[in-house]
Image 1 (spheres, rainbow, N blue to C red):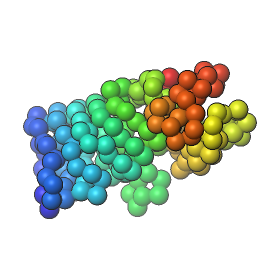
Image 2 (cartoon, rainbow, N blue to C red):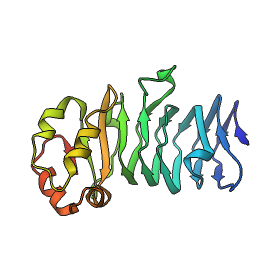
Image 3 (cartoon, rainbow, N blue to C red):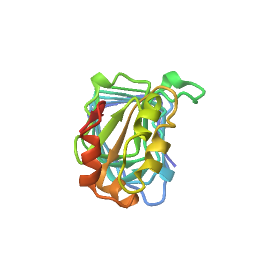
Image 4 (cartoon, rainbow, N blue to C red):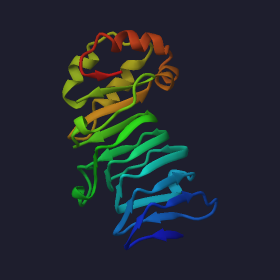
Length: 200
């Protein structure tokens, strides 16, 4: 196991690329103005009780189902592909205050099925088309399910409206959603264009 803990690292490049080791970032780790390059799968990465401040986070290998629950993210810029990642204050955590996301830029990232929980969306820059973000999905379930979605998209809509309490937005990658739901990105866009509370 490769562990970074109990210190502050400033202005360095950390490349997580071991084929055999688990990377453990935390406890009590602060990365400030660092470049964090992630080349490992979720099973080889733990980040908890850690602060990333003004960092560049570059995901070189798709990061699937990663929960940033114990990470304070402030002023960071994300690039790369992330699927099923959750950012912010996780309501079911033992210490939800250890997670947050603010002033972060995701515009160059490819996000699919990623949720932003208990955060101030006005401080975040979310990616635009072909990504799209549906705001406040949990409280809009009946409204969203009433729409005529293409393909079998209604199943996806039903799943993301059952988001954890405090979910401010869910972000998807349109071509990936279209492929999973037997439709096209264009057909999806036609519905999204009629819908308020969407970032395209």
